[in-house]
Image (cartoon, rainbow, N blue to C red):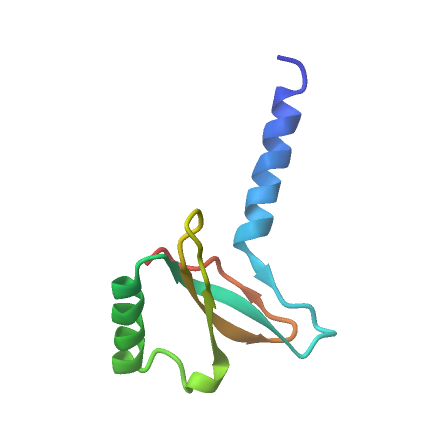
Length: 95
């Protein structure tokens, strides 16, 4: 099909842009999502694990978001970590 290769390249570039987080040097900090789930038990287990392992130096560099759901959209729990300006972070690991 004409244009199929161009469309696939564009889709692949968009996917890569979504998975890599870049925090520009001219801003103080950005947030990168490191864990997201809709299961409350998984959420609690993940938080307990990172606290026990002391994965992050302090909880002040973490942001917890609870996106409240309705009947159609379930509640989503999201944990983000603060990145200083000018940092390029790897995509978050599946967890």
